[in-house]
Length: 456
Image (cartoon, rainbow, N blue to C red; front, side, top):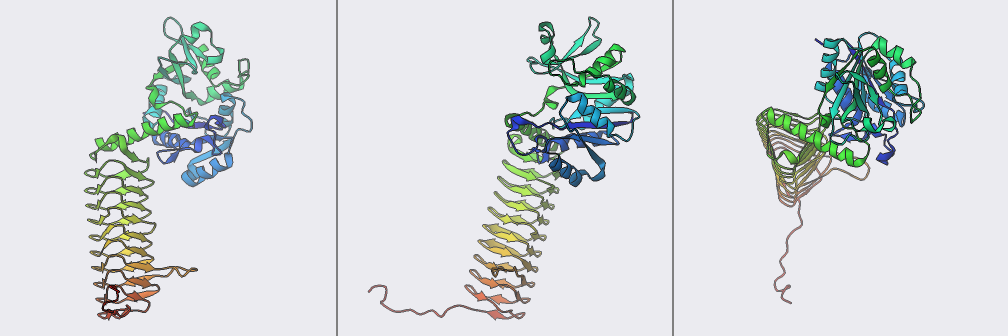
């Protein structure tokens, strides 16, 4: 079992190469800000305290931290950018608990995951080392600090690129920027850091050097694909692709049929049960949940949507903040705007738009309709071209259709209005008064045929 640990995440950098008003660590990857992926990895691995060191754009970052993590994550401010060692010093000062180990991670490495953090802590527990460093070997290590070892393989320290000699630059083993330090040792080592380097900064890597002088450094070799940082929009896109692939493969191995792994756009907090079918070019966003037996067809986009068992979303269904019941069919080209609810066995067809409307069990609107601010009972038929006229220019009003009613094609229901149980609205009607249960409502202009008029 791993030792107790806390985590400090460095997220104060300005990220000028992103060329964005948005703080660097707030740029999303798979639906979450970059820093949030690292926070979730630390918490998932068992960190009992997480401190995020913020600086540039801190108000925006702090607000997002509060909304996502409440009291599970605290923020501390690095007022001036004096190097990674100074950022760690600020983070450690913000910790409540000084026992066990302190794991140091970077807020712009969103591919870091729970297993990586656990591997650091397993090595720390087994070795008892004062410092544990994550390393990787690259064919082209340019830009990264090099791991320096003696002939026996013992770690001597880490040399940053700008401070390295030609022979040191030839080293291919690099520092990935993830560490675990014994808390007491870390506090003492941080107090001894100096700025005698090419950048005039305090380096956290010099803490590793102090541990090496005590022959107390362990390393964990890791695939660099999981630890690469994001410095510009191109790297952000590469990271997004890698994260998307990781998520899609995880679901495919859990029993989900994903027709094309390369075009499955599934965000981090989506839930998909086994025996779901996801066709090509589907986007699943936010807290979307897909239950077993559902099928999501080509090009559909769902954001915070629950899809129940056996539902079939035909191509290009677009939905947000809505609920789709068991065995429901939607689309193709259906649009569910927020607060739409489709109860079991209901159906909406091509070019039907819903907003803040409940469609009752077994009811259907198969073609070319707008259903806004409505309450629709069970087994209601809504004909093609039906419009709920819900907005009077100032306020929205509700249309209510009771069970077993029939709405003929090309009808306009001017809200607020109620169509009674079993009532029938004739095709082409404009209804602005309640229709009693069982009644027939017809409202259309009288047809006149003027013989010979068209010929003339």
